Image: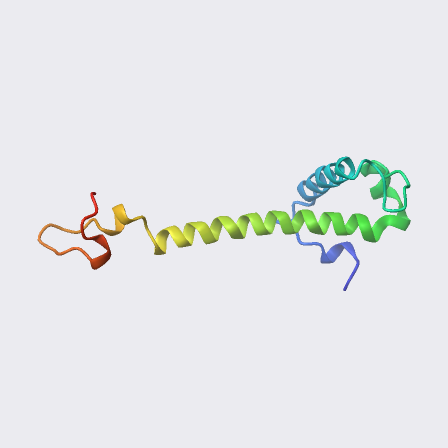
Length: 111
């Protein structure tokens, strides 16, 4: 795995949005674990954590997670939109031109 920042996914190159999201995700994580690392050490705030060269792999990972959140969210919205087009609700699926017969799965459905 490449640990350089050039391997971090970017949506239209908008690095600042990933940084901001990573900061929010990290802050939520810190809150949820009581502000302590697994060994009991206090977790630093995002700017301190991000600036620490010894923590660069970990902070880059948080930015990658933020990128994955964005990409998964976009992909999920696309999947839902495609599914809605391919599998419209019965009301839309069963609306047929005058004089045609409904599909078997539309029999008896009010439209």
